[in-house]
Length: 402
Image (cartoon, rainbow, N blue to C red; front, side, top):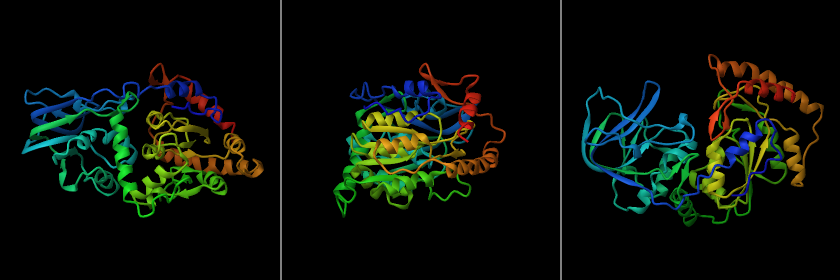
């Protein structure tokens, strides 16, 4: 992996980010993945018990099968474990493959949910694939599975504890921030190969520079403000601006696989680079100081040439719902200069825009974060933690930008 470019990042908490950026999830990528076959396995749907996320498979002796849980660097993202069953148990006379939990979030789907599917690629027996969810797998999620040769009819959704004659539990090929097998990468390569083999216009996006925008998502109250300035700068410098949600998954994969450079805001959008060719250039415009260890994994797995640009004003610690202020600042300007790209001077007009963003930010922050006491997550000594003064440091550093 090429070390991510840090020269366009703010110094605040940069040491902690660099430490996280050195996570080595691919060190044992070639090891053999485990598979457990459980006779009369009981699949437990997701349930929170005493604040813990429980779900997975229990064997016929009543023991939880650890392989059916999900591991991640942050305990917040991990789940697994048994619980007492209070409702009737369903019973089905089938041999099935355990998929795990499913909910409609594209980034988590790519990074957390599909990593057991390596087993499906290697074993052609058309078995049922059981997932635990309150919603059906459909739309773009089903389109992804179909690219892997999985038919809708194979998918079995459960909402109550269910016993199957045999439950096959493949090990997760990706455990975010901990481990990644080559078989995880092969899942995305398989999908991309299928797309390119059937493309009506092969090479349509070959050599393109693409900016993937979030501005057309249509949120009633936007999560972030200021992306238009950044988007316009990339457009003026020859980037094709694309709203991914306006295209089919196959078209999105073609764009990503064939493009020479990609740029987008931080978050789950750059996780799509799992479909990219190895070594693709990626510019991540960071809309928050919050670290994203899953993206560190993507960067390493695909050996991406990554540049991080801090283009945000992060006055407070916020969750995924924001709000986020995206700003055309000195970091962005310096990047454009170094790339011999066209840029605008930063003057009075930009300072006025920042003040207007602050006027937007204050009420939206309180609307989204009332009754929450969010901390600033820092990667310290191989785990996520906080420091007593982190929130004060954050506010003091970024209030100066206004």
